[in-house]
Image (tube, rainbow, N blue to C red):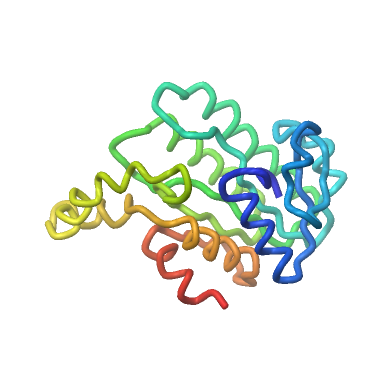
Length: 213
């Protein structure tokens, strides 16, 4: 897994360990102490596939969570370097190792804003597809949780847009999901045995918590 110390990665690794999964995580040396207990560190850089390649084994599920924190339009160059670069490196590693599945967190699309961010994530999706591996691509727009609650101010606008035929589909595609919903959807993706490439949009992410045991 990449991004194992982050907003989604840390609680996800804790949940996976609790479910009996073995977890290895690519992490910078300075961040090893931030990993959840019983997670095996692989020290390296998400943009350099070399150390990661030595740690991934045939049949592993590879999870790509690395990305720019707190995305905003002014971070276009960072999206191209980190979001796209790390996704392409991880896809290369997964394909070379013969991973059983690749799980990638992308972003809801199309959307009227954040075009550089969406373009970088779309390129990541293309890299995932090009591996030919079974994969799940999750497309949240914004994940609500600790320190990530400001979009709740927009809730009345989402509610109104959902009622109007012209904007209903966009409101649903770009809807808000909670971190608990996102974690449940990720666990479901990691444990999936479905062939081909699955796309999990916001409505499916919202339903995942109810299906997760």
